[in-house]
Length: 319
Image 1 (cartoon, rainbow, N blue to C red):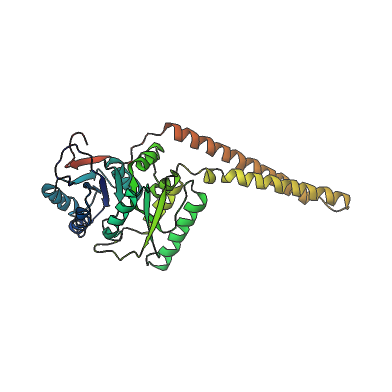
Image 2: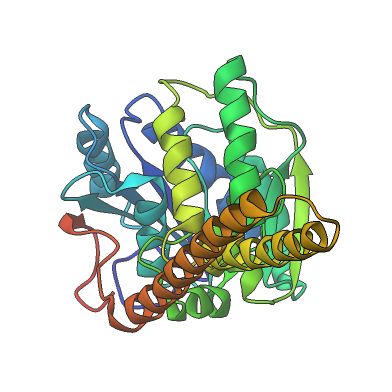
């Protein structure tokens, strides 16, 4: 069954494609996704969410929308980053399942039929996992590894190595991530956090089809910060851990001072070091408690929208 009209019928699948300056790829990715899904008997729509492109991306997608009522467009009022914009697009989808993928063909459309097959078999989350890291400069590659290390060791959400978020998610999974109400959503980690049945599909990640990559130092920094910001208890509690360590060191230094006293050796240095260490332990301990309380208050009060929209195209009034 094909969902060829702008009516209120809920599609089986919504394909969400974030884009920023993708004028070279917009037409091609639309054609490729349509070619993969049309033969497999599934109703679908395609939602492009544009992150305030400065080229002809919006104009081109509007042209696609004019001839294909299954294609929809959200245009952000400004660039909201690589985490918030795609997540907002996913939350606007009405499909019984949602696919998130890039516009640059590094997330292969050819995998979509397999994703749908596994979803029909009862799998809630199917994540594409690239077989190797993409090539990059030495410095950028090192920072990418550091970003993943920070996210894995200090973020609250689990990390699947080399998973970028490309995949298919059942609507109930999307609803579950929405309830987490993260203002800086680390979506690929939130998917795993839901605990729903998950499978991974390995694939060789092809080179970008056209245009320039948006992954740079600042994009990776945004990735790392999104993995940590607002939700990382471990990072905020790091001062507490340092404070506890400092307190233990203080006890050891005091014990050393007592031992030096009974051995008849000078103890002034030991006592000074112990006092300084105790002050640092108290300082970091209180900083940690303050940070943890601020985190809790923030989680209870924040209501920041993920993005602000400038316009929508091809969305029915009740979509």
